Structures are given as structure tokens and as C-alpha cells.
Image 1: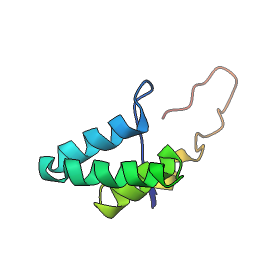
Image 2: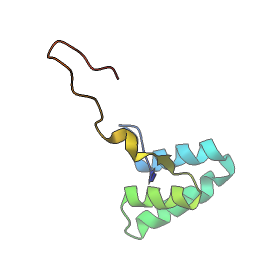
Image 3: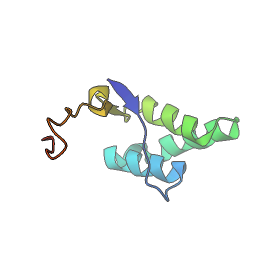
Image 4: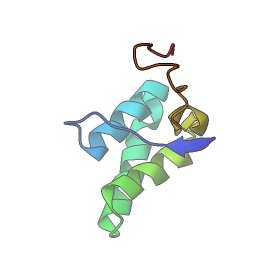
Length: 84
């Protein structure tokens, strides 16, 4: 199982962190953003700062890597379509 962070396509890392913190607990929003801003000010990249901040609050997403491997069976003939 892997721990990941994610954001929407047009969302900054700071906005993504704020949204995730607010979903979990509005009380942690200010504290979490202070940590994110401090990490960025210290020279940390925004993605790394987001990962560290969300990890500190236990808000990383956990995914099973097995779903990412191609696993579709080979078709029996060129006209058949494998079921998924």
C-alpha cells in the first residue's frame, strides 16, 4: 500500500492542502497551512511540503498498487473483446 497526495488539475498545492485539511477538521486548517508555508519558505518544494503537511496530520490517501498493473487477458481471437 502506498501513501499519496493529489490535487485537481488547476489547483495549487497550497489550495489542495487547504481543502484536505478543511475536509478533515476546520480546526487544523490554520495550523496545517502555517506548516506548509514554513516548509516552502525553508526551501522545500510545494509538492514535498504538501506531502509532509498532510502526513503530519494523518491525511494522506492510501492506495493499493495492485490496481495499476495491466491485467487484461489476451483475447481468444481478434474479434473477441476481453471482459473487464
